[in-house]
Image 1 (cartoon, rainbow, N blue to C red):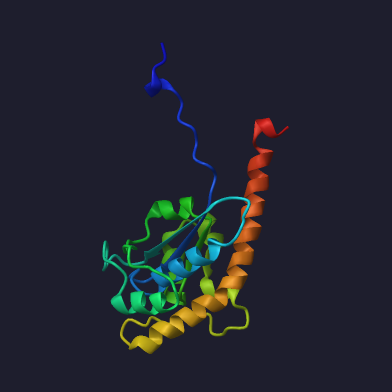
Image 2 (image 1 turned 60 degrees about the horizontal axis):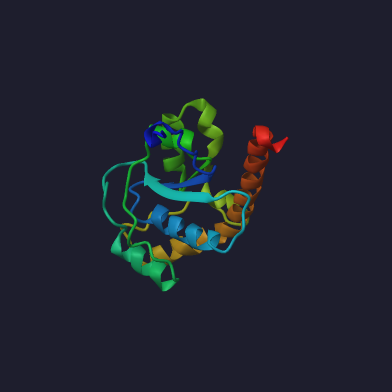
Length: 185
């Protein structure tokens, strides 16, 4: 007789995980999450990619993205209306392969919180747009709709470089996993 509750659950397929981070997780990071999800939908990678976003502060926990962020993203064919704000948690430093922040203040907050072994995972999103300086994406919250369009322009400028990095990391992680897989010999 088989006892299904005693059978060993199958591990989920290994995944590359990317977390996009801003302050409140209602403007910049959900827009970046939506754009990245859209761009990844057309790529074939060695591993599946999980994309999420969070804020360094929990001011808006559980809230949908700012209506202005939703409208700006939707004008570019990206629906972020179903996303919900959350705050970065300690487990995120372990779980995610890349934590991409929108500005230096958010980077400093994560570096202060994370154990030193995770500091290499924390990067500015605009590092993937080498021609763009400065490297911080300004918070559009207190401005008008033009600020949200500007944020999306900056996010989109980073996508080619970021997708190349995700492709590289995906292939590298897949090779590493294959090397540890006894059935790959």
